[in-house]
Length: 354
Ligand code: GLY
Image 1 (tube, rainbow, N blue to C red):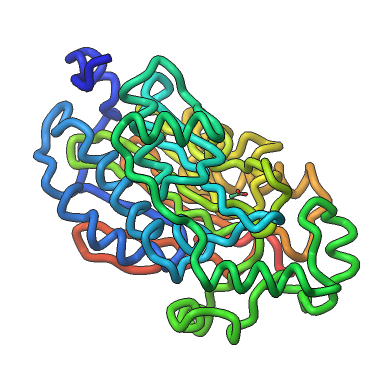
Image 2: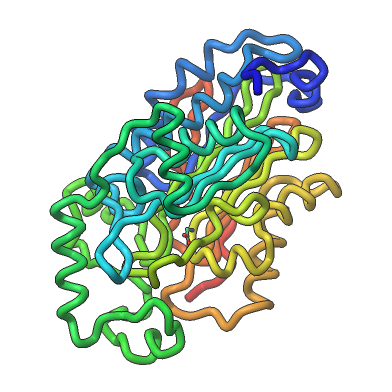
């Protein structure tokens, strides 16, 4: 299948109005990627269509930076393994309902979003899984890589030998039997974090188990929207577990006529309400981006018994260029890069006080 877009498909990808470019991403560890990717996004000239795929390429660059960074223990190399000690990676990309791709359960390739983009561009399918997805990646020129870092392996060994270790397959039991969570759900104290993440903690960002997906949304000056997300999933998860990130409509959804949304947090909660799709549909019905996410958080809160270690946070860009973020609990930071520069921002809304 050709990589070139027919003119009518390019037009379909452009959201209604033009305005300065913006890049929005999850968690402060995406600052480096946002700065790296900004020139790609900012280079797009104004006008219908913009330059093809730059909005998506910028998303891939942000994710790629986190995927390469061994200090980010929830994405790519350095991501924490499953209960069997093996890392598996999930990711998705999306420009529109007819332009999306995803992979889950990669064990031999470092950049799930790049492989997801190959699925989107080179096949008639949306999603590939497991060993066959790795094989597809190799066949499409993606290099194989070791995913388990020595630090991640050491954390897995510590988890395995901890008699109080959280069994990720039994949420209720985990919450009851883990007093060291101290109510904030943090899986690693600052002492267990890299310098980078310890520094982040001092800025008020709290990291929980089960989230910290890097999610990125872009809107170029031509009005083209794109999104991508990448994760190693729940630390020490049941082997084979797949969360929200590679599921189109759960962890990521982009519709040029309405907006784009992506999530981070406890994947199971986001999946149960089809979080990203719900946020985009709320924007289609007239909600602003933050208001749309608030509806997702209300649904999550109504649908689940929220446990201390649960978190859900989302970012969204409306088709008209407005953007917003909101979280179930405090501790989430988003990153915005616009023409004024790159900065971390608190979510506009936090749903729960606890
Ligand atoms: N939100 C990422 C995951 O649950 O896998």
